[in-house]
Length: 160
Ligand SMILES: CC(C)(COP(=O)(O)OP(=O)(O)OC[C@H]1O[C@@H](n2cnc3c(N)ncnc32)[C@H](O)[C@@H]1OP(=O)(O)O)[C@@H](O)C(=O)NCCC(=O)NCCS
Image (cartoon, rainbow, N blue to C red; front, side):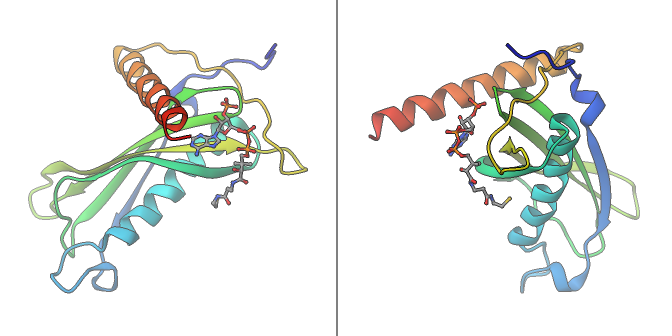
């Protein structure tokens, strides 16, 4: 039985902004995917840490889609929130938005879903607070995450 006080995704959501510098680009002048992923892992882990309240580790990358390139000089907005919680694990989603500095026009460049596990002082998985869903978006994200978790478990069983 989990007696922890439930939290909404909004209570742990994280939003931050970077400027894409030349040293973060590939030879074609657009963002190096590994650099974008490092930002994603950092921002999502902060959302998971805020929800779980203890140390967290990344346990899997469940999806990562580079939909549009990000160019040197773009402002890059990352918005992360907890979509779903299991017993000790949390799925966190992120939108990486490129903002054209001249027009302010924003488009979603990358999306990702990662799973984090909360750990106690002995580095053992520890239960996380339940998730309370309030908005339609939160409910939609929760249902989609539930599907990803189910698919992952089924696939793992089939691959044994
Ligand atoms: C995270 C870790 C402690 C989990 O250990 P474990 O022995 O698998 O623990 P459990 O079997 O009790 O699983 C714990 C939770 O992780 C989930 N999990 C385990 N492997 C997973 C995977 N590959 N993908 C998604 N979730 C996973 C389980 O479903 C479980 O979730 P639940 O409690 O919500 O049901 C261990 O895998 C680990 O230390 N991994 C290395 C983490 C790391 O170094 N990350 C990179 C740097 S942060």
